[in-house]
Image 1 (cartoon, rainbow, N blue to C red):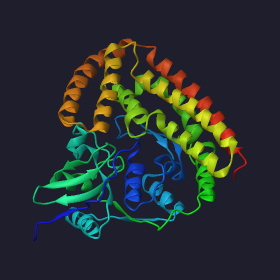
Image 2 (spheres, rainbow, N blue to C red):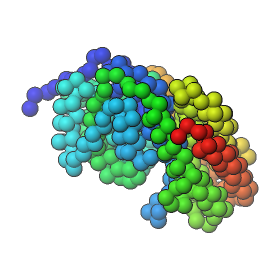
Image 3 (cartoon, helix red, strand yellow):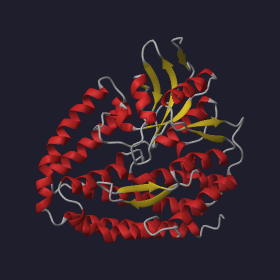
Length: 386
């Protein structure tokens, strides 16, 4: 078999807040179609909430975005006149060849990968998450490199072996399983007025009238009630994992900070101009307040009162900034931070046993945020744009 080098030389689209909108935006820009990441986010259904925990999960998943992983991309594309065709196989080699085939045709490729198999992310080996989306814009088999655009401001690379492992991973949640999207771009972006309205309505419906009680505003209420039980439900390192994960899901896990709420506020402000709707600007102000409440929740999980957790919080912010900037020695710097965090978290477990106010404070922060979210969504539902 011939050794290939397929690199899209004109691809130069890097950086973003949320992995899925970043990946899609990079492909659209490659085809000279320009929409803000926030607009794409809102068209996909915008913000949301889900509290998801099963017996097999060591800690709950706190989701802050609306729409399922695959549906999110399909909806955005449909609303901008594009098409997202989900392609999947159980064969890692076949999947790799499909990526090369798309690159040969001149198309960057939207793929799902398990973050734990991406060395440039410097994550623990057990930190599996296959719902992460990146754009592949080149493969050099001579150099054993796959060229990737992620959320960072510069290109990153993985070996072909790591790429195949990340693509074919079956680990939950959201296993990658060799999924990719074939994006067919339109010649121009159509008028978005009705699509914006539909995206906002969908967001409101999901938060105000969710299909099950652990989703939407009712899901936030449920979370408020469950927080006092975390001490009994999760012990030792598992409780600490709950706190760490909650911080990551809200602040640095590809949300743009504040549980996606700043992104949604910018989407509403952009939409207010397109729809000539001052009411949407009013709602955007409330979501900006809500974003502060979400950040307060995140800070309450790793509070100042426990020095080891405060330092962990600071280091996690620092690591995320290093990842986004992608300056020289990025991986080495991130690995050093990991070692420091590991030492701090071992000490913090003992501190948690003696701290009884943390969960009480966290519960109050969530309740405060819930009240602000309820105000925002009730006003949005009465904005007279539907």
